[in-house]
Image (cartoon, rainbow, N blue to C red; front, side):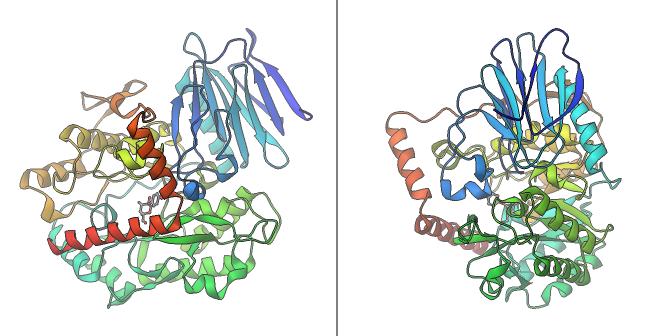
Length: 523
Ligand code: 9PG
């Protein structure tokens, strides 16, 4: 390939170096044992895998919201910005981009990195895994900005119990029942808005968002709010009124930002001046309502491939949007990014979700195994990917997602719940959605102790930690599921086919909402 810089891993290879090139390949003298694959955004898989071609994740209709769609069908082992191979003897070779739009590909005889547009610097490390990743993190911090000095607040978040079935009365009841449990933030998740794109209180919130934030603050807590500012649902007013604000491809067709809430999603173009103005006004609005903890979600949409209003690399477009958002919300707000393209978000947010969603389930067979999907909600998926992104800790407050203390409405074993809680202690990011009414008195006391804990954490081995002397081994969360065989393979093919159809996803969405309403009646 023209413009390719070639290096060879030999005896004289330096421990750490920085090389500037549009494309770079490091020749290996032996086939690697494992590949560290780093997914594009919060929910995308990060893990050490073997060197077989990564099976294509299903359904394709969800690709824009689960993987980098530009590489969804890549047949070689690959990852975003950074990749590493493990060689005989346990040493690793890490190749990490210091620019924003790079991709890594591994083969049996080389580790290769390419910038999508122009070129940039590469950080290369050869040696022990922890040292190599620490070196990469240090260099990223120098260029993109390191961790702000804000301790992570302890958060009660409405998502992992009530999901979209929230309303003012139910939330106020929860707020009351939390009593004196030491939460710093009460965070309202998805379900308060008129539509994704139309960020106004819906009819389930008769006092309006300012009223709700006010009530939260009278309990001495900060008010938190979820928004997905860079996407809009097809049925939203925003999309109908401003179709020209949305990202299109070279044939002027709208770019898909995925499918959720039973609808097609589109991506705002963050290089459009009117979009930037609208984003700033939105952030000022939610601050004026009284919210100062913002969980901004589905952020990947700002970095999707397409033709921008102002031509620039897609991840530079994203960073432009994110900068406008950060500036408008103010430095005193706490900004948690979610569904966020990892490297381009650094230096602009306080915290970052580093894995897919947890769930009251360990590993759903239909969603995780049949669809071969490590990005869908599942506690095993969440722990696996978060563990492989702990190296980001010096750069941003890492969020491994909520923990469970409840045994009601949750099929996780006590051991699985404990693994999740331990990971939260390691990250020092504590959040839950457990409804106080679902907790036994013992569970409530355990939750209190967790919120108050300031344990000493020691890493003993790659996946083994000691928390106040108590050993915690995460091995159970590591294996990727084997592909289904026999009759299950046929079932899996059917689920995969259905999953690619809007009507099937709509039915699935409706069934989920009906089940939620039933659950709510029992509250
Ligand atoms: C609200 C939720 C919660 C949650 C977020 C995000 O299809 N998907 O791949 C997909 C993944 C995650 C997801 C939604 C869809 O959840 O991570 O905490 O805020 O949105 O809708």
